[in-house]
Length: 446
Ligand SMILES: Cc1ncc(COP(=O)(O)O)c(C=O)c1O
Image 1 (cartoon, rainbow, N blue to C red):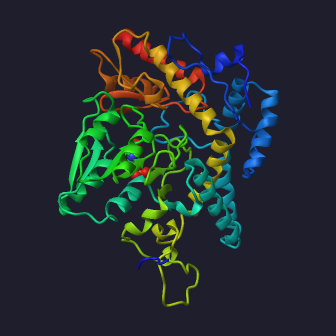
Image 2: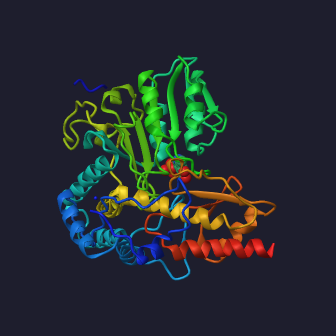
């Protein structure tokens, strides 16, 4: 069935303490005068209210004080927990855990009596996600289970022809590789491009495309190396050559601004539990409106029809909006949680968040650079990096280092035999110092 149809912020000594301003080297990040927006806990959603609250907040606080205040209020992590694992699963902000508790109490007390209010939170969430992605309309947003499901909707929705090829990188997370490999039954070739083989990673991907390339799929930030792609460059190339452009944005959405229109993205997907600071099991899926009809659906139900809610009706048509990709009941508890998490990100502003994330990763790199034998796996250039710092130490057992840190409260990850640290915007210098000191002590003892 087809449907037919940001204020400036002062630099102060206090700022230096929080963000960990470090030895500056030529060409590295310098603090920008940004339109920073951090509000003081308003749960309100309307954009104008956000900026009013944040303007007031900024009149009275420096950036560092604002961030510290926000971190204390929103991330009451236990003493001794040094959280540097947002590239895996992030802790929830306080407002998110409170929203979930409220939702649980309401369920216990009155069930779904006020389902209409739940639906309005769901509608708000779509609007928030539209804003985060700069999608043309909230109708372009579907709420799916996870990134992998959204990738599967694309891969198994398109009409493939034997001999078509899909270009990906050799650094992709398994979900963004396996799904394309599963198309071998249609004789679709998957080209895994070595990103280090050309002048730039983007160049390598572009060179691998030819007249039979139907789609280029890339992670906005690679999960192990932390390499950030120049999406606008790739997207332009794809659009000019009628190649579909699919972006797995789970490692950047919430940390780095994303603009589906500027980057000519056709499909974008991201689960909520990493940089979006939300729960697992609820992902955003953006599909460019003009392409919706090109994705054959494989899941059907009451929720994906235009006449959703008209249960007595026997005829039906596929929903015109991206709701067509959602076959049944929404994950309402996750909807409430992610809605709350996104109020924090949108109040703060993605420009502020991304400059702070980059400051934090630069701080870590500068500290790690003092460790003898440290080999950085992640890119050094700001424009190629986001929230991930991965490294190894020559002649050192990385798994042992990972155990050493994990047992001492540093929440981090071991990926591709490198230690991965992933601070978010609110992460304090003390947290990062604690991790680096433990690396130093392990290296000295080895
Ligand atoms: C780049 C990337 N894509 C996809 C995933 C998996 O996401 P999901 O569990 O939402 O399918 C991950 C998880 O770490 C990832 O890093």
